Image 1 (cartoon, rainbow over the protein chains, first blue to last red):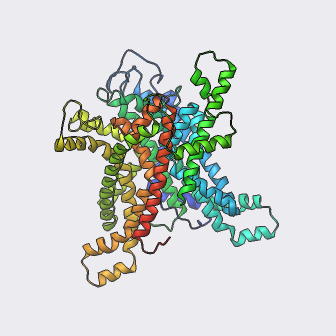
Image 2 (cartoon, chains in turn red, blue):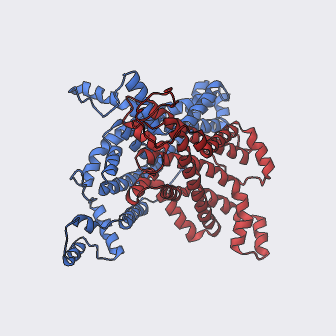
Image 3 (spheres, rainbow over the protein chains, first blue to last red):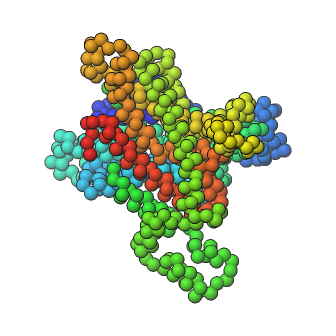
Length: 289
Length: 311
């Protein structure tokens, strides 16, 4: 998504102007609506869900429309609708927290590399390349398989494996701004480097970082679901990926075990992808692709 | 892109994972058996576990260079033999999926760029959005549900029919039938990526002066589009396939798991279930090394296709 992130410096538009342009982007508005829906569902899951998603019953493998189970039940008689509603919590938590970790790390490392250049930049370059050749999914799978799973471990692993993209973008932007006249002015005023980076340069890098952050959430939700599908989710929580793992053995007799959790993942990922597109449109109004 | 330091980096990451993983290999080996401390110390010496970390890293790297990636507990085979035996099936799946993705993706991208803003263009955008958002393992399950469970047209599992024994052409056709669904599932995301990229680079190429010149010379629009436009738009498509190789491999692991396709991905899943750590590490190493090589080849191919690039 948004493979065309403009490297040009975004005009330092105010928040209101940004919001106005965001609202004009159809992708952005649809994306934001999906994200808001996801947040509401995740927050209200205990109120919306007809029953506890982990409670088993004798009503196994019942199709959608069964009284009390609008989306059917799984092989252990657990309610699919409740599972889908509660599963949104894991996806949203892991997605947002892992993306925040990735963006914070990326901004920190990227601004060091972009501002100081030299060996800091060289080291970052090598590490970024390394992260590009090691398949993220396989590495995450190994780490979780070796060190055990759990909500916070998943967030840490996915966050740590996802920072290079943000770092690359921030590095490029900081490098471009490093020589700007107002940065020179700050230097002449005797401001320290840390102060220049944080209060002079980074605010102008915010727009592309927000775009990357939104796309990172989508990526993190997909990665978490993939790990769950491999049976490596948090064993104490209901997640969409693990529901699909469970559905795999029952595809022939219970299509609903696969269809509804998968729909949840796809809509959540679509929401954050579209929101990222909309943010990108708002950040780069000249980019007419 | 330097291949050698990257390969070294991959080895170091693997070594770190082995060293930091919880659990003492000697304790695992001995199990419940009450061993005297002298014997434990002897074992540690034998495996070189008493040496300092840099020495162990060097020894590990030397083993990797010699192609010794350890021994699978579950299969009782060397990891290299095991993975190498599965690579062929994975590459067959990946090559089919990527060819399909390139063919459909480029076609869709060119058509969308040619009729910009039309219904077709909107549809192409919708398809690529779906491609980016639908997880490939769920798409795999949906394809199984539709084409294997409900319609019964295509097989859902494996690489060949278990009940019949085919030979010659019949065997090839049988394998092809098994390949259709996994290849389609794996290709969707890259089809989306390629169509979006083709559309963007076609639009850019078609706005260049040489297109105007070609049209002014009275060339038929089809020739302008294919010979002048697409030829210049194809470059980014080549690189995107090359540089996304790591993701295709990972996607293949998930798709293979759904379809029981006997490739590296299915091996990875089984090894994960059995906690067969040497296999997991071996797959990570071999897969990363493959990506390094493919990226290098992509760079070379790019240079060969674009006379402006010189190394």
